[in-house]
Image 1 (cartoon, rainbow over the protein chains, first blue to last red):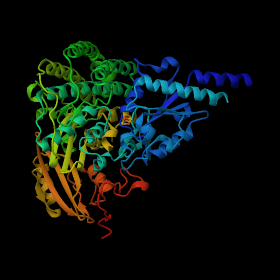
Image 2 (image 1 turned 90 degrees about the vertical axis):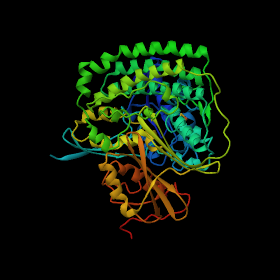
Image 3 (image 1 turned 180 degrees about the vertical axis):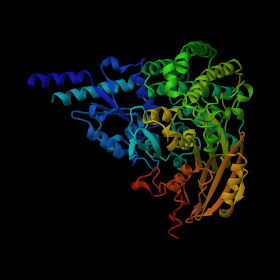
Image 4 (image 1 turned 90 degrees about the horizontal axis):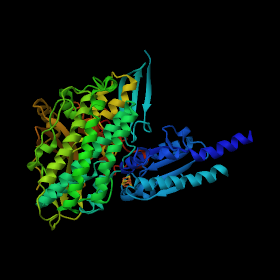
Length: 147
Length: 358
Length: 125
Ligand code: SF4
């Protein structure tokens, strides 16, 4: 039994499934995240698969400023994800609210709602930077997973 | 038959953005659809109170990442009209080049997502692969792949050298050949037609009454395109709006497919006729008065209402984006459809939620 | 320079809009502008063959305005948006989100008004 559990632990680091949630971004960050999944950048070669179901996901990629309506959705999605899990925040908006931080319906920053493990700055960050961020997230994921 | 209410979204695999639809279904048939928005609302129009009219260019670019260049162009045109600034010719042509490149990348993006909506993943990847070439052009000429900050009030910030123009031309040849090669698969394929022909029909009368815009309007046989207003350099380019008569998802797809090629052609025309000259003029004074400007976005007609009061900050900056106009037609199209066709029809209007809610 | 508009009143608004609709105009949108402590400007934009026509309605704050969503269904979205942002209430909205189109309770405080405003529906009068 222990052998199986260890096997699961080590393999899930090798093939993390990620889910992307747009939390009020301008789309710039979303299309760059999507671009990572398509042929030119192709994160699937690292075993990363994009899923739409939070219960299947290991990594949550969030872009956007977070407003008062979608923060509930964000918290809900995070709750539904099984342990261990990591969150990667994408873009200036996800980090602090970016250019929108003074707008009326902006919470400003994903870490105000859920804990964030890796931050990727940029407006929008290039796909290479997003991949880097995910890889950084994966290291944390490995720590959490083996802990 | 008992009715069930199904939530569609806000987090849904086919949607890159959160929109929520409350679908009332009877068995598999949708009888009513109610949109619930607000998941991407930021309230950025209000930022004109604290940002001056030059800084607002950077804000409006971020209304939507997919058509940011065109937002900035529309805003700048409005301010320029208000302040009586005449933009140099070269800047006008450069604006057309970048905005049409944006249209190409936006339409390719949409064609891919649309293919994904009816489950044709190989086609999705093909279109996104082609699109990367256009993104490379954006990055090489402006420094950013998505938010190409080239506009400023009074002109543009960057120039294209003769060498860059030649390179863009060569790249676009490849893009065009690759897009043409996908025509049969996108528009004539048996399975694709099965999923899109006759699905989500909007008659031209309905489209006019519901205020549809852009490819949704032109897919219903109304040949109206804001580029006919001849803003920027469109008065010196050959341009005819594209329309298809049937008003179904297939027609809207065909309009966008043809427009992709047309935009490539427009870029070429603009590059061939690019005049020499200044890139921008100095802008003096403060905006005062009211102005309404319209341009054509990839998704349709974009309207800016700007009101200045003689200070650095605008009184009101109102943005009406094309998806905002296309939501009522969507609500009317959905009833009567089978549940499995809902994603196809939702995507057929090319929803851009961050535009809609701002 | 203000844009050329046709001034209408609350009483004539719906009739004017109906006339435009029958003449084949397409509704583009409506804009609400906060003028001063007491008044809003509502500007309705219409389009026909690339020509534009604007109707301007100046209304006091705190009084409901007749909705044109009965004439153009498409207007329901923009009227709901104005309700959200300015707290101006529309009478007879085809689909009423009651100030919660975009905003949740935490922020449902007419964020676009520069000057304070009280929400008043027709029923409350
Ligand atoms: S960081 Fe920039 S590109 Fe990303 S969502 Fe925010 S404004 Fe858009």
